[in-house]
Image (tube, rainbow, N blue to C red; front, side, top):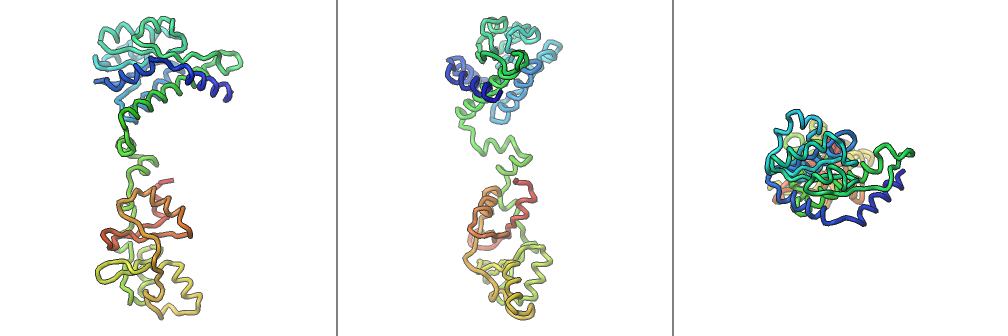
Length: 312
């Protein structure tokens, strides 16, 4: 079944016609919304297509064909483009919509496997998604046909997106929630620890005080800074353990004795997911990084905090 459906998509790619280019132009020129419409399995593809358009910068909504003829046509305006879905092109609820859309003044498009059908003759434009047969053993259940409808719709939406020069930043505006939104919007500044939660100490700070500050903050270490707030080094939990295992007492030594220099740092304006990738690709395993701005320590970024906010 997978091979049959994949072959049908590739066959469609080899016979795209000018109607696809015309539809893309219409959508780009549209002063209203793209209204996708259908019923049954084709309706599900239409609903998904509306969601894809909306999330990639094209105002769009799904109109159920059965609800449309019972009052929901009031949602449609003269500047809209109707993108109707019916593989047979004979779905009664879809076919009888075209006169109303034409009277409203919207452009009409049918996505169908039968360009010569009633819907094909009624529409202003036909998007032909014909397939040789369904992957269903009985050649009945919509399988290959709906897969090809979906693939063609995705291709149209992405082509429009590219023509709009729709950027990652534009995409983020429409996806503020969930893991995707977090990857596109959250910066290190949003996740980093600061104030008492990010221990910052002078090089002469005794080890006992250093331990107390790290423990109170629940952090993975402390930044050692000079009088101007510039980073001198970093003392991690591992540094503390190695100091004690090496035979030293917690009552001897200072931050300067334990700190490591030349380690990883980050910027508060870096995207949080990029900081996560930095953690993952760093040559050695680390759990925290000082955050520097204008050469001064402004916070502490911890790997566990990046994971906690749901970036993965």
